[in-house]
Length: 381
Image (cartoon, rainbow, N blue to C red; front, side):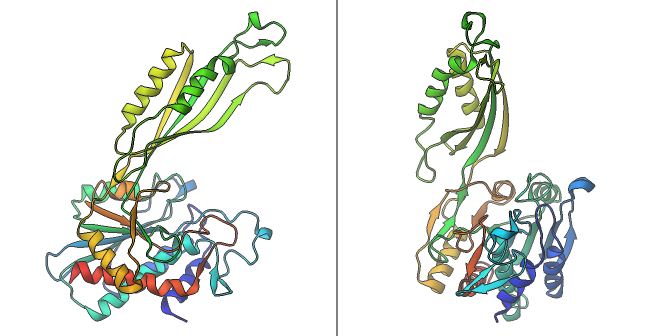
């Protein structure tokens, strides 16, 4: 068995359902400490929701560039255990695959990163550049006391970062076919349309917020918010929840509540989207209240040294020419991009993430590890 698979097995066996770390950081920290990394815990949050965070760095022999690996040890809940073919926290092999919760998202990446760094330092004991790790157990949760807090602390400390690789599972059909060089922003709204409750037989004595809101909803759905650009698709608007009424069939509701979300490109801003929505609602003369939640702003890493180094590593290892993409949901890259000029996300095949019977092809871990190591060599030597 490869060293990478062995470490992945040990990580899967730790049931680190967010925000629990279940000893994953201690395991990884021990291996990094053996390489001479300086370990700094940055745990954060209340006792009822304590988040485990680790910042680790091994300074280079000179003032060379700093490359940081970033990832999360927490996993989403497994769901119904009887729906799994095997225990989600017992690494299991079937048909050339390794199964377990977090295998793809993202303990496979973490194992590959650690072993890549071990091999890199075994061959290059004193490279001119520095390697760092930022690990958290709060990526699958609220993402308040994890990478966000750590980045704020690193910025306050004046820590320089030149490159960052986030271990998100980005590959689609085979390892290396897709690299994320940015992500869309996410902006959510909770819209309360106010009406007047009454009897359905006497509509003249009530005001139905569903009827009033219908034209506005139709316009919100049909609006073109922007055209996107060379890196991002056009901004999208989606309604996720709608609620109105008391449950009785003879009562006109007094309020309608709509949850919606924007995934937006760099062609829009939170401010511009808020203004457009509120202007639209005003045109329809609705009585409403609207609460906004900004989940993250978009970020983009243009083609540069990091993407060139990773592309060369992928081609050398697999022969695949990777596509650069900004699709998908949010990631901790949105926080790291505020303190690091070049951030890429790259990891294993994402076909089973968050699903029952999450898995990775067992033979995909070595190429992944080698790509991480080759990227280190391309940038730091």
